[in-house]
Length: 77
View 1 (cartoon, one colour):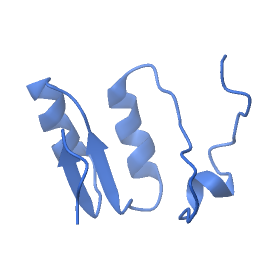
View 2 (cartoon, helix red, strand yellow):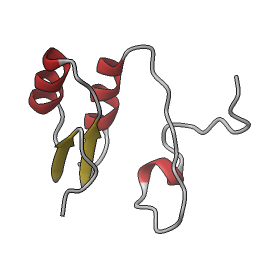
View 3 (tube, rainbow, N blue to C red):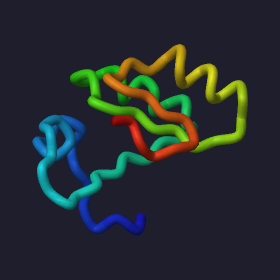
View 4 (cartoon, one colour):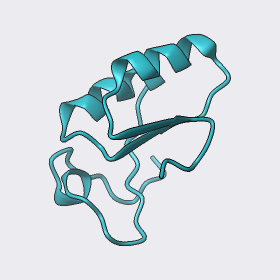
């Protein structure tokens, strides 16, 4: 694996709001697996998806709960 750090899913950097230039990354086998990870914790302030797959867009919108949701863009507020 390329990542030098492997964090437990319940580590503070993955469970608390981050006010620093950090981007924790969790890898999954299928993007649909990430929906369960997103919904298993505290509701995120924002969720972003970049895809041209219409079926995946619909799945994302129907499956993920977030304060704001954006598909193929970067600005929520």
